Image (cartoon, rainbow, N blue to C red; front, side, top):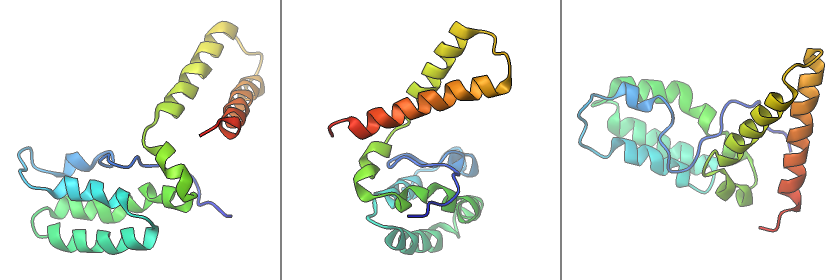
Length: 139
């Protein structure tokens, strides 16, 4: 299976980062809620069809938001390329935050790396360890 280049993985139920910047301060409708619901679809074709309907519905009222969504939302739909059983594990960024915290902790212990490659080796080793734990975990 060929994965697209990494851009960003969006969490289901979360408004894509930056979308609120394109709305007026007081918006009292369901525009963002409907945008969140796009991530609950079963596959990419269904999501794209619903996205087209969402764009048609809200482009008159919020042209800045819909223009932004047309340009950037494709990047957030990359998680649909992953197997369906992994989608439930992508609902938060806790795993990435934990990995970053562990990298920071280990960097603090070592403090000085002789070169860039040694720092990258540490990060790679942590990523491999996390991957192995993920594959061995009973879910």
